[in-house]
Length: 326
Image (tube, rainbow, N blue to C red; front, top):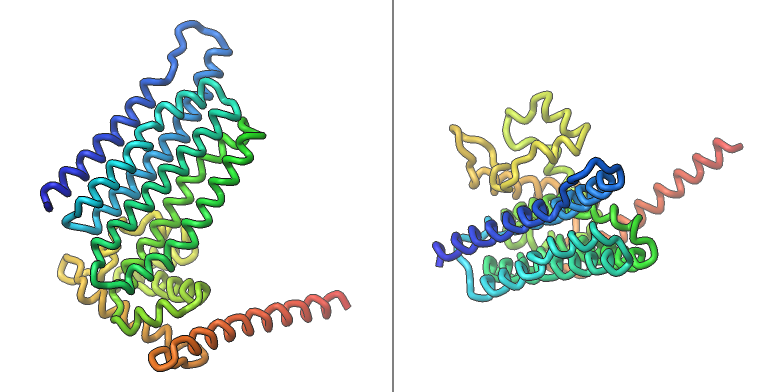
C-alpha cells in the first residue's frame, strides 16, 4: 500500500495543478484597448489571486498531512477523493464570482470554502486515527491543539458567508487573507503536534491537562531555546525579535528541527531535548502539581493559579493607572 499512497499523493498534486491551470485559462484577455475591459481583467486577476491562495494553502495542508504517513487505508483514499471533488469546483466558483460579483456568487464561494475545509478535516482525522492507532493520547492532543483553531476558522467563514450576502463587493477581498492566516496557524499547530509526540506517556498526560495559556508558554520556550549551537548566533536573536522571520525561515518538516549531528538531524536528540524542556517547564512553574495521582485537582489548581495571576496583574495595572491619574 506504500506505493499506492505515493501514487495517491501524486494524483492529488496533479488534480490541484490542473485546478490552477484551469483558473488561469478562465481569465478573459483584452482584445481591444478599452479601459472598462482592462478594469474587468484587473478584477478577474484579483479574484484569481484569492483562489490561488486558497488552492495553494490546500496543497500545503494536503502535502504536510500525507508527509506524516508512509502507508494508508481505504478510508483515507476515499476521504481524499471526497476532498478533491469540491476542491475541483474552485475554477467554476472563481469564474462565476469574477464575472458576476453578486450576493449569490460570493455566498456560493464561501460555502464552497466551508465544504472544502470540512472535507479536509475529515481526511485529517482519518490520517491521525491511522497514524496513531494505539495512541489515544495523540488523538486527544490533536483535538486539543487543532480544535479551537478549527472552530475559530469555521466561525470566521460563517461570518463571511452572512456578510457576503449583504456586502458582496467588500467581503470578496476578505477571502484573500483567510488561507494565508490559516497556513500560519496550522504550521504552528503541526509543530506542536510533532513536539507532543516526542514526550513520554506521562508527560503527554500532563500536556492534556494543562490549560491553553500554559501550553502557549511551553511553545514559546521551545521556540526561543535553540536546538543546536549554530542557532545561538545573531540570526536566532533576530528571529526572537521578529517572530514572522522566525516562521518564514523555519523548516517545513518538523523533524528538521532536530539538532544537527555530523551533518544530519538526530531525532533521538530531539526527543531527548523536548522531554528535558518539558521537565524544565513543569519545574519552572511556581507550584508543583500531582498530575499522576490527582490529575483533575491538579488541572483545576493550575487553572486557578493562572486566573489568580491574571487578576493580580489587572489589579496592579489598575492601581498604577489610578496613581498616575492622581
